[in-house]
Image (cartoon, rainbow, N blue to C red; front, side, top):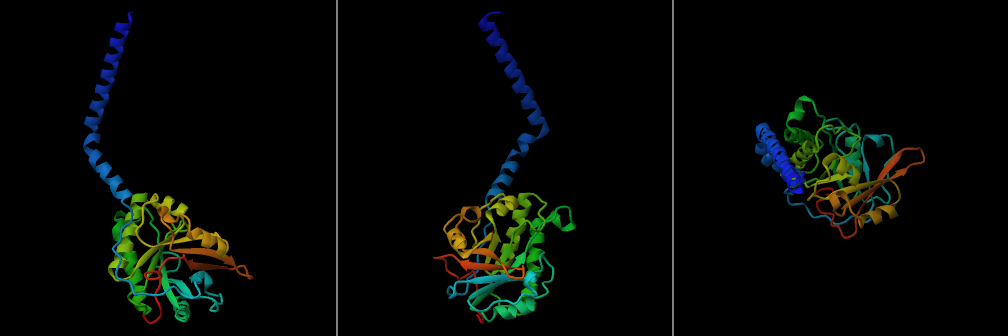
Length: 277
């Protein structure tokens, strides 16, 4: 067989294969669904976008040293000397779960220069509420708003979303983003400045690493203040510079205490609120 004949045969085979594949794609409806598929990818990549409310001005506490507390610290004597601010857990480890020491810890925080609260988050696929991630996010935010009102907390109090894999995240990353975005927007629409607590690794695992346009609070685990200060100059969640950094200290009795600092050059407005504001 001559080279020309072999070439013509090869071309004919390729054309036939392409025709078969085209018929399969058209028949399956994949081509018709392509715009929707691309639209879903675009929506996922858009990230978390929130219109923040006007925040009450607050200066960076002096000392710029804070702690965050919740139910694990119920039996811990909380420090006051050398502590400028606190972030108190509003829920007890999971969304819509009571935090047994909320009233005592919030009263203690009011003796500091500034404070905020955080709420737990999670998305469990297959539950009756999981069919609409945004609706579930709004419901969990409304639960938090009710707890804020019941505790007599300020209407402009900043709220942080605790996003970590200690809780369950069994949906798709797009569902997780929709859930978190709805929570953030609901709090913001109610007048609360919002931010996100996580680590870069956990944020990528849960959301795919989508972009954030809200303040970020980055955890670095068991460490020291010097490491937290170095983290301030690095990349935080989704490549953004962190606003707050948390490091963990082990107390003499074996319990853990979370320490926090506001990164240099970062304003505290929208991150914390002074008592009485």
